[in-house]
Picture (cartoon, rainbow, N blue to C red):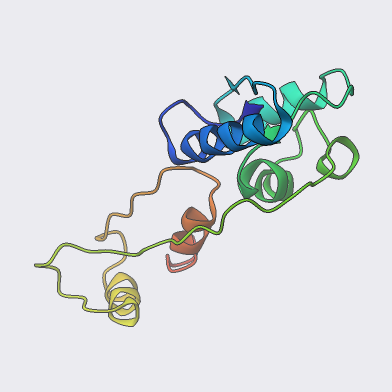
Length: 144
């Protein structure tokens, strides 16, 4: 099983749990190979070029197969041609949080503050082309 993110992260954690359950069901070990980077594109490219023998599984997030293909034209793989979806494994919950001292008490207040004072609110995300980054960018004022 190729996991498109580094060891120890949430996708790796889920993959290792899945591999253990698959071992029980299939009666054989599932080897994990982490191919991290480029929001899953490195792992996706590796799997797309693998021998199509039914022994290579790809565990990724929406980034490599849904978001990056819409944002980049230089990907070395084609999601629709190179992959066959098997199953949705998890639903993620994304949280928007601020420090307790922050003036905003809800998302609407945070958006209002961000629009009133452009460039003064720092936003952090774990991936450059992740759903949460795209959502946070949607509250930023358009470039002039």
